[in-house]
Length: 157
Length: 87
Length: 112
Image 1: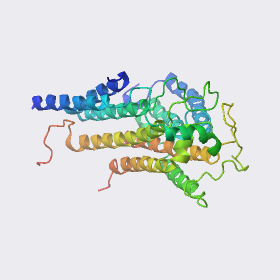
Image 2: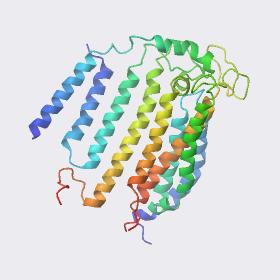
Image 3: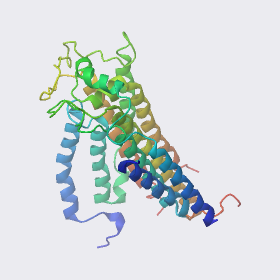
Image 4: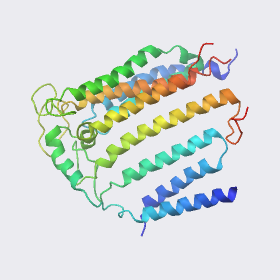
């Protein structure tokens, strides 16, 4: 059985990658969602989820970089940037980038008293929505960079 | 040629150390009026416990818009450079 | 007198600059640029330290004296910019290797 670097790693590595993908992605989504309560936010969470793409390409070999869906990732990245600008335009009644949901009683608008408190998820206005959108964009952009750099060397041999 | 390189490196290091001497001592920042306002009023105005998040996304959200555009441009740049042009 | 974190940052910047000046391989030059960028991020964050301060987060905060939050926000942007620059430099290195067959930065390539 020919085992070069293009054919991926052994069965144990591939199985452990599939098993370890679930806690890593859930942890990345937790860091994104709690960006207004704990350290982290959209950028760190998106980078955590993007490591799974690189791990998948390393475990399955360089041929797997052609099978991942590039059109979907390009759409997700563009949608992330457009939605971020749209969220900035929604507060234009007062000013650009105004937090129109904070302290308002709507979906993310609970008021927070001053001082240390255990974190409440329903606060902080438009910031959790921005965290979600930026996390999606960062994950798509980093995955695209890794996939393009890997699949360039495929077509030479 | 190698003496020019060593001289350049020594001059740059001396300039950097001269810059580092003139900063404020570590642990006692100079003018903290803006950050004191953020710490005192950030939780009441934006409603988030994380002051860094409220600075990144609310008080200085315009910089984050530029940063998201730079990330998009980097992905597009890598895509355009590493492209297979059909002959 | 000079404080130790700032001196350490200047030493790391010189190490990265010496990699850019003295090395021939293109990938090592890219690594030197990445080292300089990480040292700059460390410098920006260490400018905002306050003695006896904790992280500027109110969830379970032990005291109310916190470090400055603005340098940390600027460092987030700087990290993303350094990532973009490193990605573009590496893709240019890939194209140079494909077209000219070598990664030596001292070979003359414009005279065909």
